[in-house]
Length: 245
Image 1 (cartoon, rainbow, N blue to C red):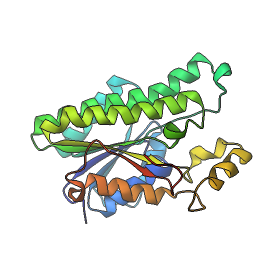
Image 2 (image 1 turned 180 degrees about the vertical axis):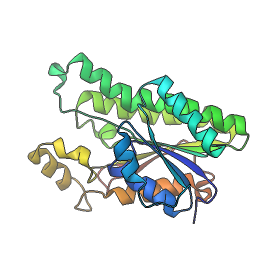
Image 3 (image 1 turned 90 degrees about the vertical axis):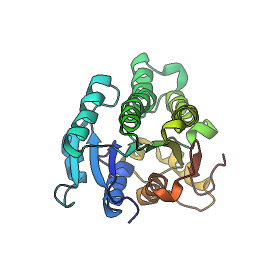
Image 4 (image 1 turned 45 degrees about the horizontal axis):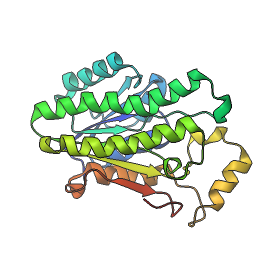
């Protein structure tokens, strides 16, 4: 098991890739904090996990006070934080010229500001511990291709740039920062995408299918583990050959 004695905090843990990462991290021996704006969904993600090895928390990643309170709860309960996975994300199908201000603010607030707020709090804890840590961010192939709503593409491209900056700045504290860049993945978030758009995306994937959440979780577990001890500042595409970085 790759993550024994590690405490991992996963945002957007209530469904899709987040839920898959919670389950995979637990299988790898980690104590897992499943954080989601929907507490009931977070609780469902940790059902059946060993008692004392998992905790569900309500957390709005776009609100700094809420994030700080959630991180404080983790330290109070488990004494440390070793891994942060910034998975929480939202989107909406908006043409650029018709995008309402509130949609732009919401998508940027969750997908980019949320990564900043959670990473800042986690990095402070990791720095104070003197033991270092790992931050894994989630971007999207849309950041590479520009295919998708402008707010979503902009937020996910911002995550990739933020990853590079944090990797350099936090290296002295032995905190590694990397990003997974998924292609189309079989999650509830994809349900709102029109069928013709979905079919077009799948046709563009050389491996001929969508990614499964478990495949993203496997890469996240690797990056969080000591097997990736010399990997930082990287944006790792997991997209079936759809795009290259």
